[in-house]
Length: 125
Image (cartoon, rainbow, N blue to C red; front, side):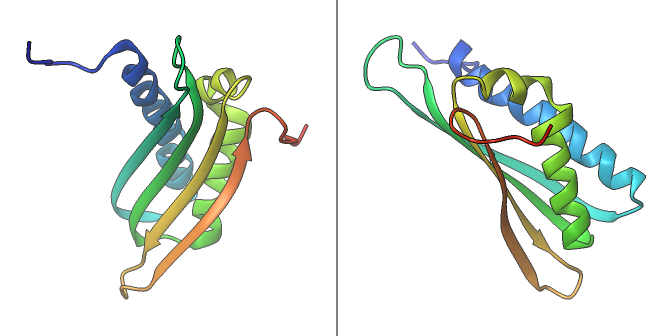
């Protein structure tokens, strides 16, 4: 049988990506940052035993354009810690790393780990 759609567990990653990317893009627009392109990559590690839940998730926001690294960092942080309800829900049981990779108009690349949410991590009030 050929799969034509993500499994329910895979769909959770897609929903997380949609939620956080919507936030980040919206915040960057409000900050008047000139994105040329925006992609998001989400990967999850799962438990070996059933019910094989996610045990860790990595999110990387990939942005090109005339965007200030600090504006992107803050946008990712706000999504992860305040605005994205999907991240808030998953963070109750899963460690989630939030990163960005920014390539400016001059070709210079900036990368950073912004924040880690989930069990055992402290979040700002």
